[in-house]
Image (cartoon, rainbow, N blue to C red; front, side, top):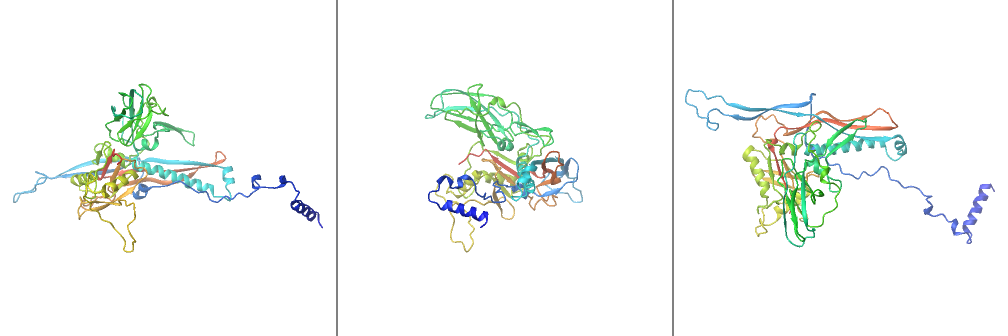
Length: 492
Protein backbone atom coordinates (compact mmCIF):
# COMPACT_ATOMS: atom_id res chain seq x y z
CA UNK A 1 0.00 0.00 0.00
CA UNK A 2 1.42 3.36 -0.98
CA UNK A 3 1.86 6.26 1.41
CA UNK A 4 -0.97 8.09 -0.28
CA UNK A 5 -3.31 5.12 0.16
CA UNK A 6 -2.33 4.84 3.83
CA UNK A 7 -2.96 8.52 4.37
CA UNK A 8 -6.37 8.29 2.73
CA UNK A 9 -7.32 5.31 4.86
CA UNK A 10 -6.32 7.15 8.02
CA UNK A 11 -8.31 10.20 7.00
CA UNK A 12 -11.29 8.03 6.13
CA UNK A 13 -11.12 6.43 9.52
CA UNK A 14 -10.98 9.73 11.31
CA UNK A 15 -14.13 10.94 9.50
CA UNK A 16 -15.95 7.68 10.38
CA UNK A 17 -14.92 7.77 14.06
CA UNK A 18 -17.97 8.87 16.06
CA UNK A 19 -15.66 10.40 18.64
CA UNK A 20 -14.13 12.78 16.10
CA UNK A 21 -14.26 16.37 17.28
CA UNK A 22 -16.92 18.62 15.74
CA UNK A 23 -14.24 21.22 15.19
CA UNK A 24 -12.80 19.06 12.41
CA UNK A 25 -15.98 19.54 10.31
CA UNK A 26 -15.54 21.84 7.29
CA UNK A 27 -18.64 23.94 6.45
CA UNK A 28 -19.40 26.45 3.70
CA UNK A 29 -18.70 29.17 6.24
CA UNK A 30 -15.01 28.40 5.84
CA UNK A 31 -15.21 29.81 2.33
CA UNK A 32 -13.70 26.76 0.64
CA UNK A 33 -16.29 26.89 -2.14
CA UNK A 34 -16.48 27.60 -5.84
CA UNK A 35 -17.54 31.09 -6.97
CA UNK A 36 -20.55 30.71 -9.31
CA UNK A 37 -20.17 33.90 -11.36
CA UNK A 38 -22.36 34.22 -14.44
CA UNK A 39 -20.69 35.82 -17.44
CA UNK A 40 -20.97 38.38 -18.86
CA UNK A 41 -22.10 41.18 -16.49
CA UNK A 42 -25.79 42.14 -16.47
CA UNK A 43 -26.09 45.70 -17.81
CA UNK A 44 -29.13 46.95 -15.90
CA UNK A 45 -29.54 50.45 -17.31
CA UNK A 46 -31.97 51.65 -20.01
CA UNK A 47 -30.68 53.14 -23.25
CA UNK A 48 -33.62 54.98 -24.87
CA UNK A 49 -32.74 57.08 -27.91
CA UNK A 50 -36.07 57.79 -29.59
CA UNK A 51 -35.10 61.07 -31.25
CA UNK A 52 -31.65 59.86 -32.18
CA UNK A 53 -33.31 57.10 -34.20
CA UNK A 54 -36.22 59.13 -35.66
CA UNK A 55 -34.28 62.15 -36.90
CA UNK A 56 -32.34 61.49 -40.13
CA UNK A 57 -28.57 61.85 -39.99
CA UNK A 58 -27.23 63.78 -42.98
CA UNK A 59 -23.59 64.08 -43.95
CA UNK A 60 -22.15 67.56 -43.48
CA UNK A 61 -19.72 69.27 -45.83
CA UNK A 62 -17.05 70.63 -43.52
CA UNK A 63 -16.93 74.18 -42.28
CA UNK A 64 -17.96 75.42 -38.85
CA UNK A 65 -21.72 75.47 -39.50
CA UNK A 66 -24.39 74.25 -41.87
CA UNK A 67 -26.10 77.11 -43.69
CA UNK A 68 -29.34 77.44 -45.64
CA UNK A 69 -31.67 80.02 -47.10
CA UNK A 70 -35.42 80.03 -46.65
CA UNK A 71 -38.19 81.62 -48.66
CA UNK A 72 -40.74 82.27 -45.92
CA UNK A 73 -43.47 83.93 -47.94
CA UNK A 74 -44.40 84.91 -51.49
CA UNK A 75 -46.12 88.29 -51.65
CA UNK A 76 -48.37 88.90 -54.61
CA UNK A 77 -48.43 92.21 -56.47
CA UNK A 78 -51.28 94.60 -55.82
CA UNK A 79 -53.60 92.98 -53.32
CA UNK A 80 -51.99 89.78 -52.09
CA UNK A 81 -55.18 87.72 -52.46
CA UNK A 82 -56.66 89.45 -55.51
CA UNK A 83 -55.27 88.53 -58.92
CA UNK A 84 -57.43 90.35 -61.48
CA UNK A 85 -55.61 91.88 -64.46
CA UNK A 86 -57.22 94.08 -67.15
CA UNK A 87 -57.29 92.80 -70.72
CA UNK A 88 -54.00 93.25 -72.50
CA UNK A 89 -52.11 94.44 -69.41
CA UNK A 90 -49.44 92.79 -67.29
CA UNK A 91 -49.59 92.08 -63.54
CA UNK A 92 -47.15 93.71 -61.13
CA UNK A 93 -44.09 91.80 -59.90
CA UNK A 94 -44.47 89.56 -56.85
CA UNK A 95 -41.88 89.71 -54.05
CA UNK A 96 -40.22 87.17 -51.79
CA UNK A 97 -39.54 87.18 -48.07
CA UNK A 98 -36.22 85.41 -47.55
CA UNK A 99 -33.87 84.73 -44.66
CA UNK A 100 -30.41 83.30 -44.06
CA UNK A 101 -29.92 80.62 -41.42
CA UNK A 102 -26.95 78.89 -39.83
CA UNK A 103 -26.47 76.19 -37.22
CA UNK A 104 -22.98 75.80 -35.79
CA UNK A 105 -21.49 72.36 -35.31
CA UNK A 106 -20.89 71.15 -31.77
CA UNK A 107 -18.94 68.20 -30.42
CA UNK A 108 -20.49 65.60 -28.15
CA UNK A 109 -18.32 63.08 -26.36
CA UNK A 110 -17.69 60.76 -23.45
CA UNK A 111 -14.68 58.84 -22.24
CA UNK A 112 -13.87 55.78 -20.17
CA UNK A 113 -10.73 54.09 -18.89
CA UNK A 114 -9.76 50.49 -18.13
CA UNK A 115 -6.62 49.66 -16.15
CA UNK A 116 -4.34 46.85 -17.23
CA UNK A 117 -5.14 45.01 -14.00
CA UNK A 118 -8.90 45.27 -14.61
CA UNK A 119 -8.47 43.96 -18.16
CA UNK A 120 -6.36 41.02 -16.93
CA UNK A 121 -8.77 40.21 -14.12
CA UNK A 122 -11.71 40.14 -16.56
CA UNK A 123 -10.20 37.34 -18.67
CA UNK A 124 -12.67 34.47 -18.85
CA UNK A 125 -15.49 36.75 -17.69
CA UNK A 126 -16.01 39.22 -20.57
CA UNK A 127 -14.02 41.20 -23.12
CA UNK A 128 -13.76 44.28 -20.93
CA UNK A 129 -12.06 46.46 -23.53
CA UNK A 130 -14.91 46.11 -26.01
CA UNK A 131 -17.49 46.35 -23.23
CA UNK A 132 -15.95 49.62 -22.09
CA UNK A 133 -16.29 51.06 -25.60
CA UNK A 134 -19.92 49.94 -25.84
CA UNK A 135 -20.84 51.48 -22.49
CA UNK A 136 -19.11 54.75 -23.33
CA UNK A 137 -20.96 54.87 -26.67
CA UNK A 138 -24.28 54.18 -24.96
CA UNK A 139 -23.71 57.02 -22.50
CA UNK A 140 -22.69 59.38 -25.30
CA UNK A 141 -25.86 58.50 -27.23
CA UNK A 142 -27.98 59.16 -24.13
CA UNK A 143 -26.36 62.58 -23.82
CA UNK A 144 -27.09 63.19 -27.51
CA UNK A 145 -30.76 62.31 -26.92
CA UNK A 146 -31.01 65.00 -24.23
CA UNK A 147 -29.22 67.46 -26.51
CA UNK A 148 -31.60 66.82 -29.43
CA UNK A 149 -34.58 67.40 -27.14
CA UNK A 150 -33.38 70.34 -25.06
CA UNK A 151 -29.83 71.43 -25.87
CA UNK A 152 -29.42 75.17 -25.34
CA UNK A 153 -26.87 77.42 -27.02
CA UNK A 154 -28.89 80.59 -27.60
CA UNK A 155 -31.78 81.01 -25.14
CA UNK A 156 -30.61 82.75 -21.96
CA UNK A 157 -33.09 82.64 -19.10
CA UNK A 158 -31.64 85.62 -17.26
CA UNK A 159 -33.06 86.50 -13.86
CA UNK A 160 -36.29 84.77 -12.89
CA UNK A 161 -39.37 86.85 -12.23
CA UNK A 162 -40.17 87.58 -8.60
CA UNK A 163 -42.66 85.21 -7.04
CA UNK A 164 -46.13 86.24 -5.93
CA UNK A 165 -46.98 84.96 -2.43
CA UNK A 166 -50.09 84.40 -0.37
CA UNK A 167 -51.04 82.63 2.87
CA UNK A 168 -54.42 81.09 3.62
CA UNK A 169 -56.25 78.11 5.06
CA UNK A 170 -56.17 76.20 8.32
CA UNK A 171 -54.66 72.93 9.47
CA UNK A 172 -51.15 73.37 8.06
CA UNK A 173 -48.17 72.80 10.34
CA UNK A 174 -45.82 75.39 8.84
CA UNK A 175 -44.55 77.43 11.82
CA UNK A 176 -45.63 81.06 12.06
CA UNK A 177 -43.01 83.40 10.60
CA UNK A 178 -42.35 85.86 7.81
CA UNK A 179 -41.02 83.75 4.97
CA UNK A 180 -38.85 84.76 2.03
CA UNK A 181 -39.18 82.94 -1.30
CA UNK A 182 -36.62 83.01 -4.11
CA UNK A 183 -37.24 81.20 -7.39
CA UNK A 184 -34.81 79.94 -10.06
CA UNK A 185 -35.94 79.01 -13.58
CA UNK A 186 -34.65 75.83 -15.19
CA UNK A 187 -34.30 74.73 -18.82
CA UNK A 188 -34.79 71.08 -19.73
CA UNK A 189 -31.07 70.51 -19.09
CA UNK A 190 -31.38 72.30 -15.76
CA UNK A 191 -34.34 70.15 -14.76
CA UNK A 192 -32.53 66.92 -15.71
CA UNK A 193 -29.33 67.99 -13.94
CA UNK A 194 -30.96 69.28 -10.73
CA UNK A 195 -32.61 67.69 -7.71
CA UNK A 196 -33.62 68.74 -4.21
CA UNK A 197 -31.06 66.30 -2.81
CA UNK A 198 -28.13 67.52 -4.93
CA UNK A 199 -29.14 71.13 -5.56
CA UNK A 200 -29.71 73.27 -8.63
CA UNK A 201 -27.15 72.73 -11.38
CA UNK A 202 -25.23 75.97 -11.95
CA UNK A 203 -21.81 75.69 -13.60
CA UNK A 204 -19.20 72.96 -13.33
CA UNK A 205 -15.50 72.84 -14.14
CA UNK A 206 -14.72 69.58 -15.91
CA UNK A 207 -11.20 68.16 -15.99
CA UNK A 208 -10.73 66.18 -19.18
CA UNK A 209 -8.68 63.03 -19.55
CA UNK A 210 -6.03 65.23 -21.16
CA UNK A 211 -5.71 67.28 -17.97
CA UNK A 212 -7.26 70.39 -19.50
CA UNK A 213 -10.33 71.99 -17.97
CA UNK A 214 -13.50 73.53 -19.37
CA UNK A 215 -16.72 74.90 -17.91
CA UNK A 216 -20.23 73.61 -18.57
CA UNK A 217 -23.39 75.40 -17.51
CA UNK A 218 -26.03 73.17 -15.97
CA UNK A 219 -29.19 74.89 -17.26
CA UNK A 220 -30.33 77.24 -14.49
CA UNK A 221 -31.11 80.94 -14.68
CA UNK A 222 -30.18 83.52 -12.08
CA UNK A 223 -32.23 83.71 -8.90
CA UNK A 224 -35.13 86.10 -8.55
CA UNK A 225 -35.48 88.88 -6.05
CA UNK A 226 -36.86 87.83 -2.68
CA UNK A 227 -40.60 87.97 -2.03
CA UNK A 228 -41.85 87.97 1.58
CA UNK A 229 -45.07 86.80 3.22
CA UNK A 230 -46.18 86.58 6.85
CA UNK A 231 -47.70 83.21 7.76
CA UNK A 232 -49.64 82.35 10.91
CA UNK A 233 -49.79 78.83 12.30
CA UNK A 234 -52.26 76.75 10.32
CA UNK A 235 -51.87 78.68 7.06
CA UNK A 236 -50.33 77.31 3.85
CA UNK A 237 -47.76 79.43 2.03
CA UNK A 238 -48.48 79.58 -1.72
CA UNK A 239 -46.03 80.86 -4.34
CA UNK A 240 -46.39 81.41 -8.08
CA UNK A 241 -44.24 82.98 -10.77
CA UNK A 242 -44.79 84.22 -14.31
CA UNK A 243 -42.74 81.94 -16.62
CA UNK A 244 -40.02 83.29 -18.87
CA UNK A 245 -39.31 81.90 -22.33
CA UNK A 246 -37.32 78.70 -22.01
CA UNK A 247 -38.29 77.91 -18.41
CA UNK A 248 -39.70 74.39 -18.10
CA UNK A 249 -39.21 73.92 -14.35
CA UNK A 250 -38.68 76.01 -11.24
CA UNK A 251 -36.59 75.65 -8.09
CA UNK A 252 -38.03 77.16 -4.89
CA UNK A 253 -35.78 78.46 -2.10
CA UNK A 254 -37.71 79.22 1.08
CA UNK A 255 -36.79 80.38 4.58
CA UNK A 256 -36.55 83.46 6.71
CA UNK A 257 -34.86 86.41 5.00
CA UNK A 258 -31.23 85.55 4.28
CA UNK A 259 -31.72 81.87 5.12
CA UNK A 260 -33.54 80.62 2.01
CA UNK A 261 -32.69 77.01 1.11
CA UNK A 262 -33.89 74.74 -1.69
CA UNK A 263 -37.22 73.12 -0.75
CA UNK A 264 -38.83 72.01 -4.00
CA UNK A 265 -38.44 71.69 -7.77
CA UNK A 266 -41.67 71.78 -9.79
CA UNK A 267 -42.63 71.54 -13.46
CA UNK A 268 -45.45 74.04 -12.92
CA UNK A 269 -44.81 77.71 -12.00
CA UNK A 270 -46.26 77.40 -8.51
CA UNK A 271 -45.62 75.63 -5.24
CA UNK A 272 -47.19 75.33 -1.79
CA UNK A 273 -45.59 74.85 1.63
CA UNK A 274 -47.75 73.53 4.43
CA UNK A 275 -45.29 71.54 6.58
CA UNK A 276 -42.18 72.63 8.46
CA UNK A 277 -39.33 73.37 6.06
CA UNK A 278 -36.43 70.98 5.65
CA UNK A 279 -32.88 72.03 6.40
CA UNK A 280 -32.13 71.76 2.69
CA UNK A 281 -28.90 70.97 0.87
CA UNK A 282 -28.35 74.20 -1.09
CA UNK A 283 -28.69 77.81 -0.07
CA UNK A 284 -30.00 80.48 -2.42
CA UNK A 285 -26.63 82.22 -2.08
CA UNK A 286 -25.16 79.43 -4.22
CA UNK A 287 -26.99 80.86 -7.25
CA UNK A 288 -25.00 83.84 -8.43
CA UNK A 289 -25.35 83.99 -12.23
CA UNK A 290 -27.31 82.89 -15.27
CA UNK A 291 -26.04 79.39 -16.10
CA UNK A 292 -28.81 78.46 -18.51
CA UNK A 293 -26.95 77.97 -21.81
CA UNK A 294 -23.65 76.83 -23.31
CA UNK A 295 -23.24 79.37 -26.06
CA UNK A 296 -19.87 78.20 -27.41
CA UNK A 297 -20.15 74.43 -27.11
CA UNK A 298 -23.81 73.41 -27.61
CA UNK A 299 -26.53 73.42 -30.24
CA UNK A 300 -30.23 74.19 -29.78
CA UNK A 301 -32.55 71.22 -29.36
CA UNK A 302 -36.16 70.90 -30.46
CA UNK A 303 -37.64 72.49 -27.33
CA UNK A 304 -35.23 75.41 -27.32
CA UNK A 305 -35.82 76.04 -31.03
CA UNK A 306 -39.58 76.10 -30.48
CA UNK A 307 -39.47 78.26 -27.34
CA UNK A 308 -37.23 80.97 -28.79
CA UNK A 309 -38.88 84.24 -29.70
CA UNK A 310 -39.72 84.47 -33.39
CA UNK A 311 -39.70 80.73 -34.03
CA UNK A 312 -43.32 80.71 -35.15
CA UNK A 313 -43.93 77.57 -33.08
CA UNK A 314 -47.11 77.31 -31.03
CA UNK A 315 -46.23 77.86 -27.35
CA UNK A 316 -48.75 77.79 -24.52
CA UNK A 317 -47.97 78.16 -20.80
CA UNK A 318 -50.82 76.77 -18.70
CA UNK A 319 -49.49 78.13 -15.41
CA UNK A 320 -50.33 74.99 -13.46
CA UNK A 321 -53.83 74.49 -14.87
CA UNK A 322 -54.75 70.94 -15.79
CA UNK A 323 -55.76 69.69 -19.22
CA UNK A 324 -59.51 69.74 -19.85
CA UNK A 325 -61.57 67.18 -21.71
CA UNK A 326 -63.84 68.31 -24.52
CA UNK A 327 -66.42 65.60 -23.89
CA UNK A 328 -65.88 64.34 -27.43
CA UNK A 329 -62.84 62.18 -26.76
CA UNK A 330 -60.28 64.98 -27.12
CA UNK A 331 -58.36 67.49 -24.99
CA UNK A 332 -59.25 71.17 -25.42
CA UNK A 333 -55.67 72.43 -25.07
CA UNK A 334 -54.31 69.99 -27.66
CA UNK A 335 -57.20 70.80 -30.01
CA UNK A 336 -56.39 74.51 -29.73
CA UNK A 337 -52.75 73.84 -30.62
CA UNK A 338 -53.65 71.70 -33.62
CA UNK A 339 -56.12 74.28 -34.91
CA UNK A 340 -53.59 77.09 -34.47
CA UNK A 341 -50.92 75.18 -36.41
CA UNK A 342 -53.38 74.66 -39.26
CA UNK A 343 -54.78 78.19 -39.24
CA UNK A 344 -51.34 79.82 -39.31
CA UNK A 345 -49.14 77.42 -41.25
CA UNK A 346 -51.34 74.64 -42.71
CA UNK A 347 -49.32 71.95 -40.92
CA UNK A 348 -50.06 69.09 -38.56
CA UNK A 349 -47.74 67.35 -36.09
CA UNK A 350 -46.76 63.78 -36.87
CA UNK A 351 -45.90 62.89 -33.26
CA UNK A 352 -46.73 64.06 -29.73
CA UNK A 353 -43.88 63.51 -27.26
CA UNK A 354 -45.09 63.25 -23.67
CA UNK A 355 -44.10 62.35 -20.14
CA UNK A 356 -45.77 59.39 -18.40
CA UNK A 357 -47.83 61.85 -16.34
CA UNK A 358 -49.25 63.52 -19.43
CA UNK A 359 -49.86 60.21 -21.20
CA UNK A 360 -52.02 59.22 -18.25
CA UNK A 361 -53.76 62.61 -18.06
CA UNK A 362 -54.49 62.74 -21.80
CA UNK A 363 -55.93 59.24 -21.64
CA UNK A 364 -58.09 60.09 -18.64
CA UNK A 365 -59.45 63.24 -20.32
CA UNK A 366 -60.23 61.41 -23.54
CA UNK A 367 -61.74 58.31 -21.94
CA UNK A 368 -63.79 60.03 -19.24
CA UNK A 369 -67.41 60.96 -19.87
CA UNK A 370 -68.23 64.63 -20.36
CA UNK A 371 -66.12 67.69 -19.74
CA UNK A 372 -66.83 67.83 -16.01
CA UNK A 373 -67.82 64.29 -15.15
CA UNK A 374 -71.09 64.58 -17.04
CA UNK A 375 -73.06 61.74 -18.55
CA UNK A 376 -72.16 62.28 -22.20
CA UNK A 377 -69.91 59.46 -23.38
CA UNK A 378 -66.84 60.45 -25.40
CA UNK A 379 -66.62 59.52 -29.08
CA UNK A 380 -63.78 57.02 -29.40
CA UNK A 381 -62.54 54.49 -31.91
CA UNK A 382 -61.15 51.18 -30.62
CA UNK A 383 -59.09 49.01 -32.97
CA UNK A 384 -59.26 45.23 -32.32
CA UNK A 385 -57.99 42.20 -34.15
CA UNK A 386 -60.56 39.55 -35.08
CA UNK A 387 -59.02 36.92 -32.81
CA UNK A 388 -58.89 39.13 -29.72
CA UNK A 389 -60.52 37.53 -26.68
CA UNK A 390 -61.66 40.80 -25.17
CA UNK A 391 -60.68 44.30 -24.14
CA UNK A 392 -57.77 44.75 -21.75
CA UNK A 393 -57.98 46.80 -18.59
CA UNK A 394 -55.84 49.93 -18.43
CA UNK A 395 -56.61 51.38 -21.84
CA UNK A 396 -54.31 54.19 -22.95
CA UNK A 397 -54.36 56.64 -25.83
CA UNK A 398 -51.92 55.52 -28.55
CA UNK A 399 -53.02 57.99 -31.27
CA UNK A 400 -54.61 61.42 -31.26
CA UNK A 401 -56.82 62.29 -34.22
CA UNK A 402 -56.27 65.72 -35.78
CA UNK A 403 -59.19 66.88 -37.93
CA UNK A 404 -57.33 70.07 -38.91
CA UNK A 405 -55.51 68.57 -41.87
CA UNK A 406 -56.16 68.00 -45.56
CA UNK A 407 -57.50 64.67 -46.70
CA UNK A 408 -59.90 64.11 -43.80
CA UNK A 409 -57.44 64.47 -40.92
CA UNK A 410 -54.50 62.45 -39.60
CA UNK A 411 -53.71 60.12 -36.69
CA UNK A 412 -50.86 61.39 -34.53
CA UNK A 413 -48.89 58.83 -32.47
CA UNK A 414 -48.59 59.73 -28.78
CA UNK A 415 -45.04 58.69 -27.86
CA UNK A 416 -43.70 58.32 -24.33
CA UNK A 417 -40.27 59.95 -23.92
CA UNK A 418 -38.25 59.61 -20.69
CA UNK A 419 -36.67 63.08 -20.93
CA UNK A 420 -39.81 65.13 -21.56
CA UNK A 421 -40.60 66.63 -18.15
CA UNK A 422 -43.94 66.19 -16.47
CA UNK A 423 -46.20 69.08 -17.44
CA UNK A 424 -44.89 69.42 -21.01
CA UNK A 425 -46.15 68.20 -24.40
CA UNK A 426 -44.00 68.60 -27.53
CA UNK A 427 -45.80 68.38 -30.86
CA UNK A 428 -43.46 67.93 -33.79
CA UNK A 429 -43.97 67.53 -37.51
CA UNK A 430 -41.26 65.33 -38.98
CA UNK A 431 -42.06 66.36 -42.54
CA UNK A 432 -44.06 69.09 -44.24
CA UNK A 433 -47.39 68.12 -45.83
CA UNK A 434 -48.04 67.86 -49.55
CA UNK A 435 -49.31 71.42 -49.84
CA UNK A 436 -45.73 72.64 -49.37
CA UNK A 437 -45.03 71.95 -53.03
CA UNK A 438 -41.39 71.81 -54.10
CA UNK A 439 -40.35 72.77 -50.55
CA UNK A 440 -36.90 71.13 -50.79
CA UNK A 441 -37.35 70.11 -47.15
CA UNK A 442 -37.28 66.32 -46.99
CA UNK A 443 -37.18 66.53 -43.20
CA UNK A 444 -38.30 69.33 -40.88
CA UNK A 445 -35.31 68.53 -38.65
CA UNK A 446 -32.04 66.78 -39.50
CA UNK A 447 -28.87 65.92 -37.66
CA UNK A 448 -26.17 67.43 -39.86
CA UNK A 449 -23.13 65.34 -39.06
CA UNK A 450 -19.72 66.63 -39.92
CA UNK A 451 -18.22 63.49 -38.40
CA UNK A 452 -20.39 60.74 -36.99
CA UNK A 453 -19.65 58.67 -33.88
CA UNK A 454 -16.03 57.53 -33.80
CA UNK A 455 -14.03 55.64 -31.17
CA UNK A 456 -10.51 56.66 -30.20
CA UNK A 457 -8.34 54.35 -28.14
CA UNK A 458 -5.76 56.85 -27.00
CA UNK A 459 -2.02 56.10 -27.03
CA UNK A 460 -0.81 54.55 -23.79
CA UNK A 461 0.57 57.08 -21.34
CA UNK A 462 -0.43 55.20 -18.19
CA UNK A 463 -1.14 51.54 -17.53
CA UNK A 464 -4.73 51.87 -18.66
CA UNK A 465 -6.69 51.69 -21.91
CA UNK A 466 -8.53 54.97 -22.48
CA UNK A 467 -11.48 55.16 -24.88
CA UNK A 468 -13.11 58.29 -26.24
CA UNK A 469 -16.38 58.36 -28.22
CA UNK A 470 -17.14 61.59 -30.12
CA UNK A 471 -19.40 63.07 -32.79
CA UNK A 472 -19.38 66.46 -34.52
CA UNK A 473 -22.94 67.46 -35.37
CA UNK A 474 -25.75 69.96 -35.14
CA UNK A 475 -29.53 69.80 -35.14
CA UNK A 476 -30.86 71.80 -38.11
CA UNK A 477 -34.56 72.67 -37.82
CA UNK A 478 -35.78 74.11 -41.13
CA UNK A 479 -39.41 74.72 -40.19
CA UNK A 480 -39.66 75.54 -36.46
CA UNK A 481 -43.25 76.68 -37.03
CA UNK A 482 -44.09 72.99 -37.49
CA UNK A 483 -43.70 72.44 -33.74
CA UNK A 484 -45.88 73.14 -30.74
CA UNK A 485 -45.24 73.18 -27.00
CA UNK A 486 -47.75 73.08 -24.17
CA UNK A 487 -46.02 73.42 -20.81
CA UNK A 488 -46.73 74.22 -17.18
CA UNK A 489 -49.51 71.60 -17.17
CA UNK A 490 -50.81 70.68 -13.74
CA UNK A 491 -51.22 67.03 -12.80
CA UNK A 492 -54.81 65.87 -12.79
